[in-house]
Length: 367
Image (cartoon, rainbow, N blue to C red; front, side, top):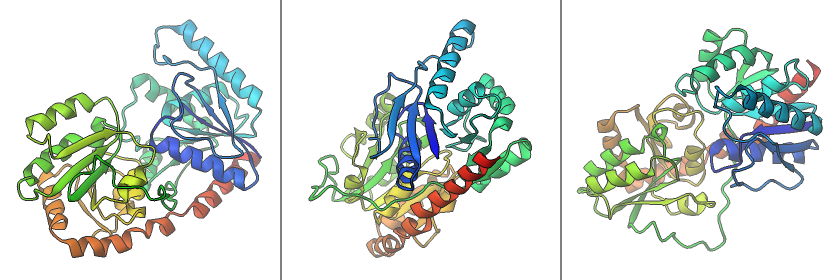
C-alpha cells in the first residue's frame, strides 16, 4: 500500500522518532512509505530509514497568523497540491495541528487519514482556533489514535463523533555506540538522569527544586538533564539560585541518548503531563530504574510500581524527594528494579505495534 506519514518536521522529539520507526517498519513489511514534513526550514534530527522516501511539502511556518486569510489559503492550497502529487492510498498524520491541516485539505476522506495525537489533549493547550478546528475536522478522520486509555476516555466523553482508539508507542532494544566511553558531562560517581525538551510540560523546574533538597545528603550524585528548548535560560538561572552549578549538567540534545543512559544509575521523570513518554521507556529499556510523577498520562501504563520503578503523586515534591532518596541510598534496590525494567522491550514490542497499525490501515483503506 502507498502510505504517506505526515508531520510538521523531523526535529528532536518523541513523536518524530516514532514516526520514523513506524515508516521504517511498514517499509520492511512491503509498503511504499513516504515521510513528508510541512516545515521546510527545520532540519532533520532523525535519519529517514532505508527504503523510505523523504519529501518536504511546501507549507511554510507561520500558519498560526489567523488574521492573514490570503496567506492561509495559499498555504493550504500548496499543501493540497503537495499531497495530490504524492498520491497516497492513506495518510498517517502525527500531532494535533498537522492533523487539522491534513483533514482540512482532504475534505471528502480521499485519501483516508488516520490522525494521531501524541500528548494527552486533555492537558495540552493549542489555542482556541485550533481547538475549534479540531472539534470540527476530526470527525472526518478514518481513525483518531490516542496513546493511553485516559486520553481515549476523554475523547469519547467529549467527542462522541470521533472514531477513536488507543495504543502505546513501541519500544525497541537500545543501540549503543561501540566502546562508547562515559560522557564527559556525567562526572558524578552516581548519576541521576532526566531527558526531554526544556519546556514547562517536562517539569524540570520541579526537579531542580527537589534535587536542591537532596544535594547535601548525596554529595556523590550528579543530575543531568538532556534536551533543549525554550526554558533553558530560566532553568540555568534557577540552577545558580539554588546553588547547583557544580551538581547539575544540561549539555543539550544528543543523537545518542542510549550512550548516556548506559551510565545512568537512576532515571527521573518530573513531567506535569505526558502522552506516552518515550524517554521513560528508553531509560527502562537500558535497564535503568525510574522514579516518575504519576502524571496524566503514560507513566502508570509503563512503570510497574515497586517492581521496575516508583510512581509518586503528580506534582508532589516531597514524595518525589522521598522516592529518589530511597533509591539513591539503596543500590541493591536499584539493581533489583533494573533487572525488571528491560521488560518494557517485550511489553511494548515493535511487532505488536506494527500489527496494530496494519490492522488500522487495512480497515481505513476498505472504509
